[in-house]
Structure formats: C-alpha cells, structure tokens
Length: 358
View (cartoon, rainbow, N blue to C red):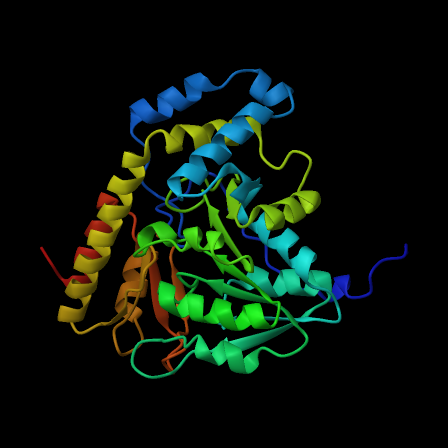
C-alpha cells in the first residue's frame, strides 16, 4: 500500500450518477426537466465546432462568459471565476480556507458535499440546527453562537438545500459584519437562486469576506455540462484561481453558457412558470388536507399527515423518480415527499390522481 493521507479512507460519500441517460420523468434531482425550445437548442448545437472537442478551451470565450455574468450580476469581470460545476468551486474554497486545525460551520441539514469537502481538508464540521416551530426556520443569529476561534469558514446555502428556506439581505449582511470582525469568510451557495426572491451576489462589492457561487445545473438546465461560477472581490478571485483547474470549463460548456446568457428571457419564463406552479400546487395540496413546505426552490415537500402511502403508490405505479422517506427539521415524521416541479404534463396528471381530480 502506498503512503496517503490517513483521513481519506474515512470519507463517506455517495455518487449520484443516473442508471441510464433516458429514464422516466425525473423529479428527484432538482434538475430542469423541461426541454429548451428547438430553436435555441439547434442554434447552440450549430455553434459547436470540432475545435470545441479536439482543442483546449478558448480563453476569449471564457472571458466573454465572465463578462456577461458580471454584467448580469452588476459586477466587473475581475469579480468572476468559472468552474467545472459549482462543486469544483466549493472544493477549492474549502481548500483555500480550511485545514485539520480549523472547523467549518453550516446548517443542519445541508448539502451533503459540504461535509465531504470538510473531511477532504481534514476540518471538523459544526452545524446550526433549525428552529422546530411551524415551518422550518434557520436563525442566522445562531451562527454567531456556534462560530469559535477555530472557525475558518461559514457556509450558507441560500435558498437552503434540502429545506428550501430563503434568507434576506439584511440578515446576511448582519452575519457578514460579525464574521468580518473575526476574519472569517462566508460562502453563500446560491444554486437555486433563480427560484427565490433575489440574489445577494452584488454584496461582494461591499464585503471582502464573501464569496457567492451559482450553477448552470438547475434553472439554466446545464447539469450535464458541468458549469458553475463564483463572485467575490478581485483579490479573492485571484486566490481561488491559483487553486482552479488549468482548464476548468470545456469549449462546449462555455458556448452553452454564452447561448443562455444571450437568451435570458428563456430563463425568466421558465422560472416564473415554476414559481407559479409551486404556489398553485401548494394551495391545491393544502386544500386537500396535506401539510406542505413550499420554500424558494424548484420543489415542494408534502405530507398527507399519515404515511403518504397514496402518493407513493401512485408515483411508483408510473415509475416516477421522486424522493420520499424524508425528514424535515421542524417535524417528527420521516415520510415527507419531495417533488421537483417540472411543468411536465405527465406530472400534472399524477398530481390530479393524488388529489382525486378529474
């Protein structure tokens, strides 16, 4: 056996590859399920050239995409870094800030990869629990209690995954001011931000202890192409770039990003439709007696106040990919269902079946 870091074998993680590319309706991974309009998709495909596959990626296209993202977020080019999905950016932020002498603070529950990356750098993970009153609530004041002298990084998903709650700007700025006094970085993970009220990315102009990351995997519909971005001060971006891959994005993924940034109305139309469906479906389920936690993402959690057997059987009958057997932090039950909102007509039919609608 060769020499290796002793803590690596202790890392516990799960792989999320799909069994097949084409499956039944996928409502379990929070992806965009609705296809793009044919015109957009065909225009993107026609923009691809052999050089996008046989050559290393174009720096000019990389810079152009950074410029467009900067403009969209009211920032400058120097405030943007691209990565191979937001996960690769998460990893280098953990590497930049933390080691075996430090701890990292985040919420419980949180995105599982936060714990994996903490283990990779040898840091311990400290968590802030949700308040178990009414709908799940996370009080950012509690982060101030959990943070200590060994804390190197605070990670906050906003909206949260897997709960879905959204923290507003004034609360985040209050936490930033507290962390600034202790020289601690706040990492704000905005993977689902397009389904929420607004982004806090522009705060990086005021706070040099803030990094905001976003992804093209959710509302942008690019999960298979692996494209993410980070926003921060130019100094922080330069530090992260030293840890980034030599070629963090591919030629094809860069062109996909450029195509989307030139057609942002498609994103707006899609996210508005998801928000409307979230509101409508939540009300329908509540009217039928279900407990619902809607949140600010592209899914809802629901529970029939019993065992969710009816909904589970209907989804299983139609070979639907969905998440069940979940526990939310405000509730003792461990049989919540999480359903991605797809805007797909099949999903609408299955929901009608659950609600006994004609």
